[in-house]
Structures are given as structure tokens and as C-alpha cells.
Image 1 (spheres, rainbow, N blue to C red):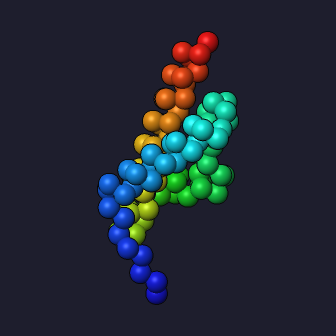
Image 2 (cartoon, rainbow, N blue to C red):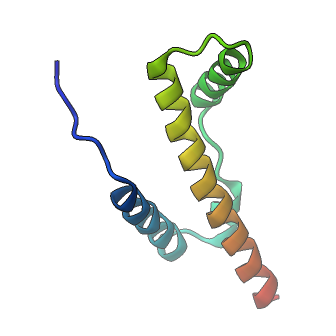
Length: 90
């Protein structure tokens, strides 16, 4: 089994900032705001949330849900900044 090194919070934040900068410089505001996860990922998120709500989430699934939550937090920041930039431009 391949062991992946644990990603520390500062490294995650740096990676998130890089994603934000890339999206801001390579995508139109409309494209950024139109971003949606795939149907299969959305279904996985819903399944994890349902298991979490019923108290049946495994430790591995908890970590997966935590990562999804971090990603969601990043996307909220990206959407908010993009919307604010669009509003200032109009």
C-alpha cells in the first residue's frame, strides 16, 4: 500500500491559494461562478453527509468529508471574490 505524506495546514493553504490564483487568471468570472462538481462527486458528497448525519461515518470517510469541507470553503472564498470583482467592474 502506498503511504501518502500528511499534508500540513500551511501546505494546504498554499495549494488553495495557487488554485485561487490560477482560476482568477485563467478563467472568466462567468466560468468561475458557473463551476460545479461532477454529478458523481456530488452524489458522493451527499452519501457522506447522509452517513455523517446518521452517525455511521467511518474514520476514512470522516477524513474524506473533512477534505471536501476544506475544498468547499475554498470555493466559497473564490465565488465571493469573483462576485465582488464582477460587482466592482459593473
